[in-house]
Amino acid sequence: MPLVTNTKQSFWVRNRYWIILGSILTFLPPLSFLFQFTQDSNFCGTWCPRMFFVIRSGMSGKEFAIGLLRSYAGVGLVLGILISTFFLGRYWCSHLCPVGGTMEWVSRIVPKSWKINYSTVPAPSFRYGYLTVYLLAPIFGIGNLCCNYCNFATIPRLAGAAFTQADLAYFMRTAGLINLGLVVVLGFLARGGRAYCNLLCPIGALDALSGKLGAKSGKRVRVRENACTGCKACLKVCPTWSIDMKENRAQIDQLSCLPCRICEKTCPREAITYGKAEN
Amino acid sequence: MNKKITFYLLALAIFIPAAHYQWGDSAHSIGMISKSGGQIRHDAFFKPGWGNYTLIATATVIPPYRGDVRVVLEGAPLLEHQIYFSKPALDLGIRRLPRFKDNILYDLQPKDRIALWVVMKPGKEEIRGKYNLVFYDTKDNRPVLTVPLTFADKEEANRAARHQH
Image 1 (spheres, rainbow over the protein chains, first blue to last red):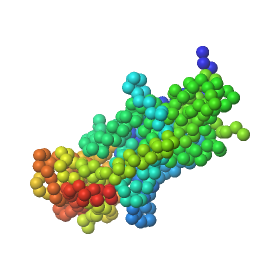
Image 2: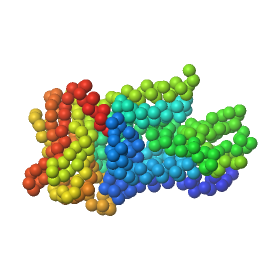
Image 3: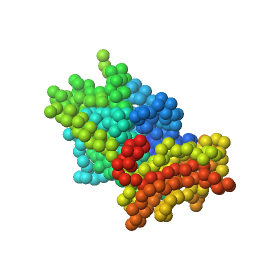
Image 4: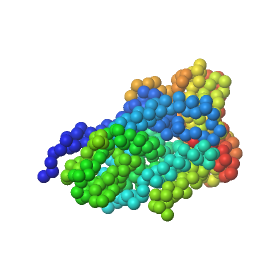
């Protein structure tokens, strides 16, 4: 019988799926609770977390500033995410993001035999290839990935489509259907439900950089090397395939790790812990 | 080649064309509703030949304008269309929202922000040329915002669409 460890008693570990569900109810239709304080019904507009840092060719400083003001709630949200990640790890992505959380929830009810395993893809390389285009293509006037391929537009509208015609209209267009396809293939059908987060989310990509920058000083999921036996139990459950084996010991890539702490819960030797680095 | 570099280049190869190519069946217009006739950031471009078009028209009400506004799609030949108002599925009444019924926005007030989805179905006919989505004040029938919709060929539409979000 497995031991009841501190990890298993942690509020954030025990209640992660309930916290995600709370976030889904807070952010997504039918309640869209937080958005209603700003006359919005979704992440588009005041709460948009993706557009304000995109600089278009020929954009003036004034236009950029107007974009920041227009999305003031989104700016605050992203700054909060990056700062909290630096100190505590990517809790937004693992516990609070309603977009990634929805994909993970749905993936849990998809039969295992339908699941796609993306773990052979080196996620950081692909993710930062995507982010390079996301940031540079508008600057050079090549085009824009911002609104056309947006996870923060697709998931809320998918939730809202059952309730309002306006949200349903989002899917009456090619870009909407492509976004839906991406969410299904990289989210709902992905093993762990987090391939979209790991490969194509610009907020996740920026958040991962903050996570990596604060990895030495902040709290992170870490492996106690002397306790790890190399059983690979953690590898099989990691939704972002961020654990690798080196010299028969588990190693966590802080550029991809979300502190979902499933690995910590799974480890039979309690070799994985969440905390600051030991000196 | 190193696997990491390969996947980085693969991502560039996928997403540069993805960023460049714009689907011709949808567009987004950003506008300002005002007493003086309103203003838009850019025209909305569509490519002819699609069976279904969607425009999302967002706008902010510039003070001191307030009133009721009728939304009309103008142009020839007439285009079958539906206009939907984006609002919370379950309005908790935390903030006042304009009401939308029979293509009329009731009780618009300064600084209100609206989002309308216009779904257009041209039928068998290929649509070309200019249409306008016009917002008329119901009291004096004067336009408070006009959104030009251009159904143009591929190159022109692509060129213009690159400036759109």
